[in-house]
Image (cartoon, rainbow, N blue to C red; front, side):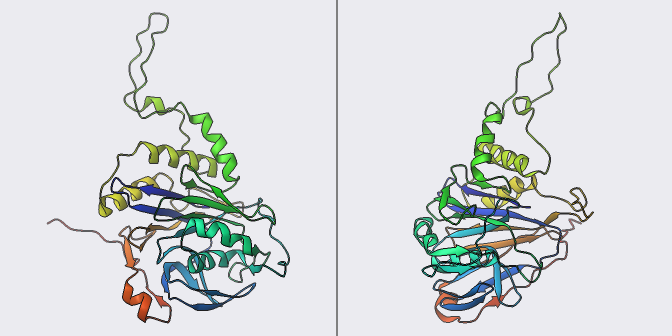
Length: 327
């Protein structure tokens, strides 16, 4: 499944964070992709111009599910079952892309969300399976940049266009428009305490702070995770520096992070949060936090990497739980 959110701290720095929730072990790790690459995608060859860092894996070629590029454009791919309408072939004037190659194409060719709005008119997402899973992955995508501009790409028809995301949150199915309308169900909720009324002369005792949020959904379905993330993002206290912001994002994702075993699929396998990814769009830095080690592990895009490195670089993750003894 997965949940993602954008965040702007009080200094104006922009971030894009996500959970990667899946039952099949994806084995992703931070990978640096240099400028000017030719990638043999599963729907055909495509080229990139810009360097980027993100979570990916090298199978028949490098595939990415999220990351940030040298201009501060961030992207994340999330599962979108039963709503995609991929095409079988691309028109002669458009580039055909497999769904699992869209993230790398976008990060490698767009400088901003505004730039991407025009570029998506030149591609078609095709019904092409990924060999690792043996299926065509149903995906939609959230993009955000260093200005805070945020939009979603949902291939529900052959006509591809970015959809504005005013709350900067995305989960899974249904479409973003449905999730935004569903927020009205919870529009009266606040972070304050609700005063209680007496009933038939009975003086009711308070249940404490937070009673104005009674009814906030707490399950792991996509609609509930979307609402919970919007609410927590809206009421969280603003941070003013990078370490505090990353710490806050960890706490915000805690409410939608799925432990192993609590969300089972029909086949009995467990969807769980394999990792959490954090992109600092203003500082061009990407962090991963695997399930078994909650310490952030980051890579910053440097000028040296962008101008001198010409081959992809993989950064293995440390999966050992880190515990600090105080005596």
